[in-house]
Image 1 (cartoon, rainbow, N blue to C red):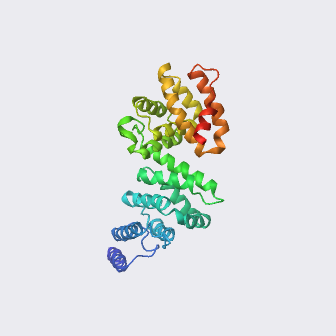
Image 2 (cartoon, rainbow, N blue to C red; image 1 turned 120 degrees about the horizontal axis):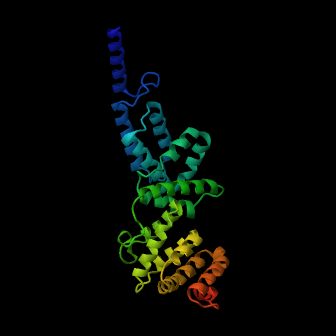
Length: 294
């Protein structure tokens, strides 16, 4: 019996060295399989930005081996996460290939969504934000919304316990706009309204240099969570509230300029805040907006 077992094991190892084994022979993640998957991941990563390749098809082939040999742990799982997120971030022009696989292979769909996680690059997650909000394929708005939410959850996990909206994280001056807008997305994705207060502190500390991007980011935060924003603003001393409001006027005007469909509602809500903060019952944001739209 022991001899028979040795023969079976020897035959199995020989078949692995000769090539990949059949699922019935060895549905386990042996070293040789791991090495082959590593090569496959490497080859796919190197060509991910090649517009002439069917990268999603290649990833699906890798997935089949991962599922067959149960190789979704450790570095292989992280490799799958990196690949999935990079495809959404850097090969968005072929997202229709994924949508087709999503329709026909539900198991692959579950696999991909499960690998949009906190082990990946936050820069790639941010690029997913850009792709889904600016270039969503027509008719697939629901998919883009779901992908944005999932990427946002992963982004929030990356920053868990950290303070991306603080001065030392954002950096000095307008040199790091990515972090500014990442801060906005983090507030949206995680619901961490405490970050609004942090960001207002940053704006106050730079009251002598009212960077346009910071003002726009403040306006974006307000547009995302107006009630929480107003609540945090009211916690500052009156003079600081006025300073923040005056800075925000420019940000709000620029935001309204870029989002004309929101101009009416923004004019109304900002005017109400201005009347309270500035103690001016006649304040009307529409004049600031008209100047920006000229």
